[in-house]
Image 1 (cartoon, rainbow, N blue to C red):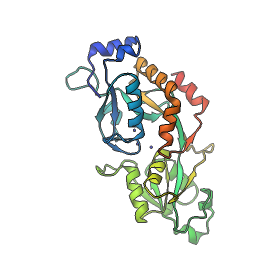
Image 2 (cartoon, helix red, strand yellow):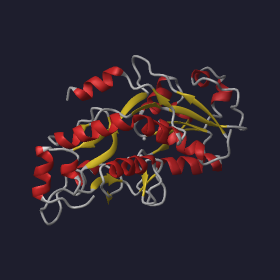
Image 3 (cartoon, rainbow, N blue to C red):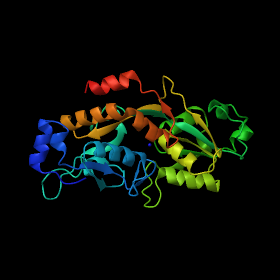
Image 4 (tube, helix red, strand yellow):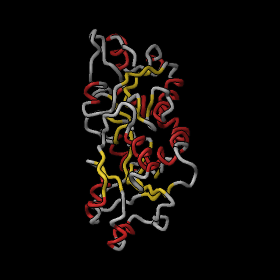
Length: 286
């Protein structure tokens, strides 16, 4: 799953002293983001992370400013943790979407919980599939016809391996390095072309792919976690370690705006699950 003005040392220290939202009113809401990563963020500001950032900034009486960098290995190091060239602070302050409890950042409380889903293109001979387990139980001759995307990392590939379907997988990289397509865009393109017929995708990306085609073009089957394989995860916002004032600010904004946040995310067709109580407690205890 897809997801910043300069700040003077004086203002930054004021922030950490943490007087209140008003103390930060002179700042901009500085977001680290990928410029081409639908449905999370884009330079056109039409991703759900863009919309949540705009919502928060408006309430803080701030302007959103982005530091854009493709979401690749080293993203956090080169954005959130990277100092400005002139030494007056960091390039950006908030990453709008990270796994809850992510070790590279301090994380806010989670603001949504989703799951991987099996996305199947209709009218290609698979319309009778209603559960992922059916794929593993197909006759061998039918199994050999499967064209299912698999990634170099992620639970989908592990699931294929455990169910004896790895030979039917068509490999994809989790990070494309493509300046014109992110992973979700590439999967959408290849599903339309018939290069693949199905894929196990993280919920936000599954929602994006589904949204790009006419209604009822896909069967969407949420993947269920088991004791030995996890498919559902909580998503939070990331700040620098030690930036407790900003973390608390984000927590307050999440609490205040949870119904609207859920509405924004739901409008992207993302499968949403209740946020587990332990995910919230873990984050509050950090």
